[in-house]
Amino acid sequence: MTKTERICARSASSERRGPLTALLLVIGALASGCVPLDANVDAAGHKSTPAPAAPAAAPATANQGQVSPASTGSPVAAAPAAPSAPAPPPPPPVLSFDDAVANAAHAVFKNAPTPDVGPGMVVIDPLVDGMTGYQSTATRSIQDRITTIVRQDFPGYSVQRITPESLKQQPRVLVGTFTPVNAQMKTSGDREAYRFCLVMGDLKSGKIVAKSVARARIGDADSTPTAVFSDSPVWTDDPNVQAYIATCQASKVGDPIKPEYFDGLLAAALVSEAQDAYDEGHYAEALDLYATARKTPAGDQLRVYNGIYVTLVKLGRTEQSAAAYRDLVDFGLRHKRVAVKFLFRPGSVRFVTDNNPFSGSYGMWLQQIATQAVASQACLQITGHTSPTGPAAMNDSLSQLRAEYVQSRLEADAPQLKKRTVATGAGSRENLIGTGRDDASDALDRRVELKPIEPCT
Figure 1 (cartoon, one colour):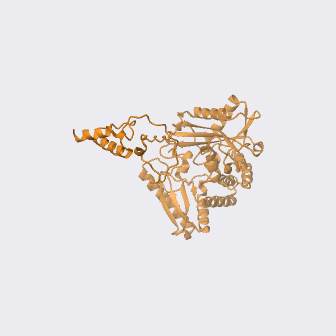
Figure 2 (spheres, one colour; figure 1 turned 60 degrees about the vertical axis):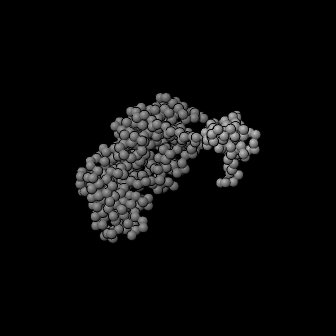
Figure 3 (cartoon, rainbow, N blue to C red; figure 1 turned 135 degrees about the vertical axis):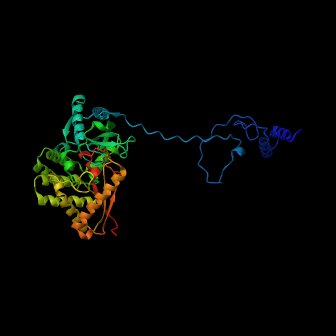
């Protein structure tokens, strides 16, 4: 008899021996290839039916109270595979502008709870670009289309303008963003479509009650800013506008309406009326509305300061407009970013000279920026930007030269700023719009930004 046969024979008779001896014999048999690795073979090498799984016990600490599977006579069960995270839903299909708006509007009104008393009032807080907060020809068109759809297909609702009076009735409110995005729905790289987000909030319950997202073809929409936003000279991140955007983009059904947005609704209603008056050429009325909005608790916001400035320019009040521009710069410095829409000649570092009352004010803008920078004892990083049109290396060089030109003008107005500014060029790497149209719709992509440097060394 061979050594392997002797081991197998002793293993076969292991049930007549003690448990420890049997265990050692089985181990030897396994090593010799006598006993198959079968999940139904117990520690003694017997065929058996697996015992039912015992209730899960509290996990033992390392090396404490642990029993090996072989010593228990129970089969070794494979650990269940961890559940994989659900795949993110695919982005919505890219549709025509009209179809995207219709789909989004129908989805929101169909999915929203039926108003308790009909017709339920809904107001539209004017839709904006999700990156800049600007209103455009496209966002105005969306609002008009939604109003038409509701009147035709949802008689249980009555669409009203957002005003201080309509807000007193605690209506439902629609907010929306219309933002150029790439194929991955991100606001970077080559923009291929517009992402359209539409949300309905209920002011009585304070909650989001419906939401939809659609995509529209990039070439179908006219993203030219409305008159007041086209004329506005300064841009920065405004907490009030960011709260509006987050209410649409960063919320889901059932979430509470963001308090920063909720608390600013009165100011938003006044600003909406002021913007309408400005676009219609009623500048004195617009100025009164902007000034009233400024007095509200949420009145410290960029679109209010921009509105006051541009209406004063339109009314020819030069001295007051200079003071209003100073307030704009102060707001930007407080929020660590002043993006100015200087209009340069194509391929040049010189400003455009025309009859536009705003481009004719570039000298005053630079003086006010220099004065405020000196008063705040700030050092400034001055960054030039370009649209994505043209070779990247050329855009980098052009943006650098334009930043250096603004730097030289500021230091000429305030020699105290020498050695307290640094000029850099970002080319087109930080586009806010990114469509490359090189017209009024993407003017902010050709901005010059000034950011305080802390600490100032």
